[in-house]
Length: 211
Length: 211
DNA sequence: TGATATTACGAGCAGTTGCTCGTATTTTTA
DNA sequence: TAAAAATACGAGCAACTGCTCGTAATATCA
Image (cartoon, rainbow over all chains, first blue to last red; front, side, top):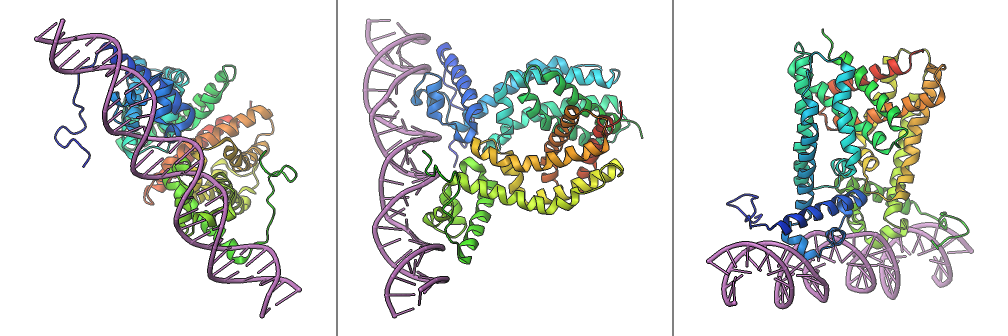
């Protein structure tokens, strides 16, 4: 039905030259720009190719279709986020004061999101296919798992399902505040950031406390 | 340039028969469905007409274009929201305990959003034109102004700009939590609702308190 | 009853979309 | 070197987009 029944979604794995890898990178850069500007649905593959200085035919030698471009782009974002925050999340979750914990967890994420506006745009875009929504999963799970782990350290008395609810609510709160953070100018950013942290601090203080 | 230079965006105001009003209503119902299913960008006017059991030509006798359909739909949502919540917002904002205030304000909004899933979808859709984004303004301002007014009653000591920041943060928090609320089953809803209110309660308790 | 305005239809237009394919160039392999 | 593979191009296709327009049915008004 979908083409490859034997090897699932695996590609024939043709040999890539250095030139090809570079082209893929350029195409993803262009895709990030076009997706961020027009949204997924209105972004045309021809426009992406043109923005990368390539022809449509070239684009389709590296990607099977529009959806695969977005998936590859999302995968690249996830890899970068993981690299940038792997260290930031490794904190002594139990001992640190809550305010310091929030600083350590949030500051790198805010910096990443502001440096990669396409990431947030693509994550929040509802005009995407279910398959692409699946590709967002790792990005979401990455944050969720680490937050849940930190909460497990800080509040070992909390039942697992309550803990997961707290993590989910905290993440959704932050996602809701992200548009404010993204839209803020460099001058407004400290104020908005402080208020966002205050909101999360207030919630987590009561959600994680004993009894 | 855009046609009517004298009467701005006003339509020639042709006489509508009862039949016509009914058709417009049916077309907006169909549009709500199609927008909610495919998003604004991928929703085709032909599909909207078909979903309403009408021809494309009929659709364009009542609306000048796709954008105007979305604007009219949004206006209808705003009117309904206003009707449903006008009373709910008129509370003695200063005297009521914060938890009760949240109940009175949030419960009707949650009920409305769950009853009209297309509203939330259209509001959150980034694939819309700037003109349509303008049409969302009344819906957002409606909530913001009322919340800001309530806060002014409750915390008269708070400077206006701090109060507006608090209102904006509260709204964004709630918007972030809305996807959880929308996705929750009838069984999960009370738990999710309680947690959302707890989060807002925790934040507002510190943001609105004196000094 | 006409006369006029409103509602209704749907084939089809100009433009765009995602994508293909024949062909040409460049790089690696032998 | 010559053959094979990878990269590159861009005209153009089938499908779809928002939308038009000639025409016909239905309702209101005289």
